[in-house]
Length: 322
Image (cartoon, rainbow, N blue to C red; front, side):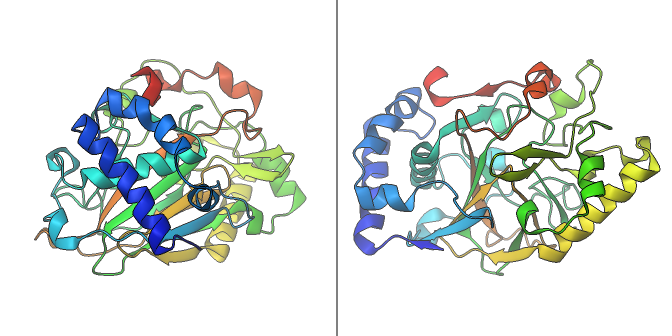
């Protein structure tokens, strides 16, 4: 855990409020363009707290920020109805992600927004997306289907009255046999777009197989999404190695129950994340997270072959090229 003291939290909140007041909306292209300059004005203390993940656990919780529950209003029933609710927190999360890398957005997800709202939605209870509730959200790499996926995933808690846990597991805490690692380095089956990317699911290009594990100078990294991986297309030896990886990730998994204002920062190359099941009430008090993604340029965590992937027609956007 990393903590912002009262002064540091106030500074970060104040800079976000100034940006929002100057530009009127968290989605403003002018606000997005001003993010690097605003980050440059933050104090050394804030920058130190906002440095990227730097442990084998592959995650940390930033604590010290405090949203006003009443000011937020009720938890929306769908991301598309959020409007400007929690807009200050969109900007705070953008400042945090810009301090660590370059925020990215997807043309095919939540209208291309750089900050997504994760809320349980009626009719999606059993889906393998952030809108689900009644099922286990299977541990996965965020946007595993795409070569331009984020290096860092950030989840900011707006509301979590029921203490619903996010799960996380680091590949660098697992114990895998050399033979299993060798199998999972092989590009055997593809990872398909998840249900949040309807346009990508209609892409006509042929899915290409991708490796699950990679070697890097810092250790193993991972690309993993079993809910959207056609495992039955793989040979038995590979499937057995994949199953043992699933078992190891379950063994080392930790449960993180976020409090309002907490920002969970996850190394998306090292850690898979998910969520435990819960009963959504749809009464305005349900769990509400805001999500941002960031890339860190020059990071040696992706194999060169990924440059040739089509990404199912999806393109990542950056704030300075909107």
